[in-house]
Image 1 (cartoon, rainbow, N blue to C red):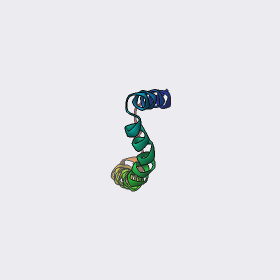
Image 2: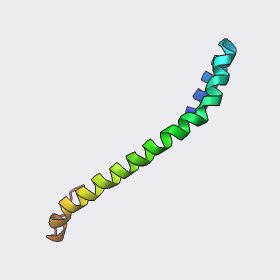
Image 3: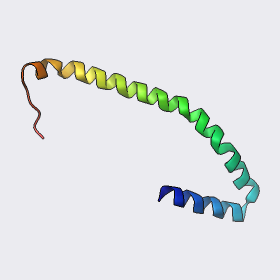
Length: 69
């Protein structure tokens, strides 16, 4: 559904201002390439926080504490 809305928006932009639509079409891969390292950093930060959380809850898990759902 999200891709369909994006495509309809791009078609409207192409109908109203085709040079801007072509520029957006050409710059989309560059924006994706620039955002890729930021996503990798986000995954790394999330993994570090998960590790810290696991280390903090380790004593309680060793003592047999169970989470309530």
